[in-house]
Image 1: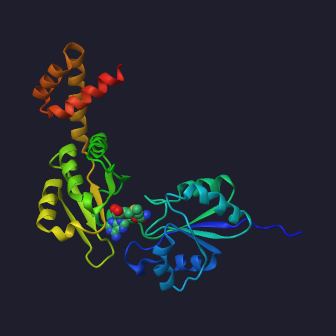
Image 2 (image 1 turned 45 degrees about the vertical axis):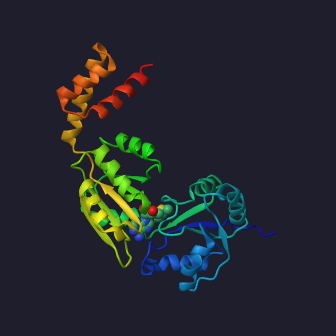
Image 3 (image 1 turned 120 degrees about the vertical axis):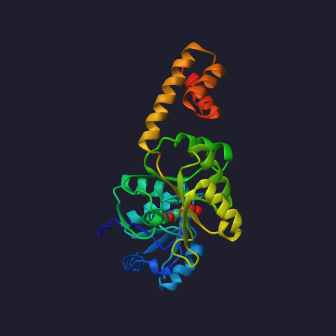
Length: 284
Ligand code: SAM
């Protein structure tokens, strides 16, 4: 009786623009596996052809992920080794794959990372903002309202914050950043990393808007946005502001409390109004 050895699932990073960023190990692993699970098999064909990798592919994207998992797990359990790749960079980083990896691990399948390019890490490494502590936020909500709320929730985050963004939302996201994080906050726009027109530009959100409006062509291309964390001093100022607001809310109607808190602390009324609303909702 032949007992099948369970296969291994490799999570393989591919380049984010520059083919020379493909690692030797990525090529070796992709050539050695039985099958490649790709986010978009048509998109990955030129990359695989470039490195003479000829393997059967299976698609695993956002819309068929759940259905495909059972199929891929079954193949692994039959002894196949499979490599997961996404359209660019590291799978699972704002890309499909998490449910598959979770299921594979739950099924006792060995999952092996094959590291390489990742736009967030590449941008961080060259942006000039602190990298000792950072948070990765992925994509902000597409709708302006949701985007503003998320940014408002991050106002006091002291770690460097990394966002992915679609090019057509670059200007409106920078605008929301200026409004929600304050006019002085340093932002870096890392564009077209590893490609011919790569650029890494820093400034306040307003300065960056001025630049990108004047250089319309640069509004195109892939971007990572990196935001300096809130400084500790402004955090403690925020804590004081919140205390003033809380005390006034205990004594006065909401509108009056907001108005007075704004006069005392210098904080904008709409910021205090939102905070006051959250407090009253919480205490209901
Ligand atoms: N998994 C990928 C990674 O490891 O970076 C990210 C995939 S996510 C769907 C695509 C987003 O990553 C883009 O919208 C952009 O924000 C960022 N991105 C990818 N390649 C980039 C590049 N060459 N330069 C700047 N940003 C890039």
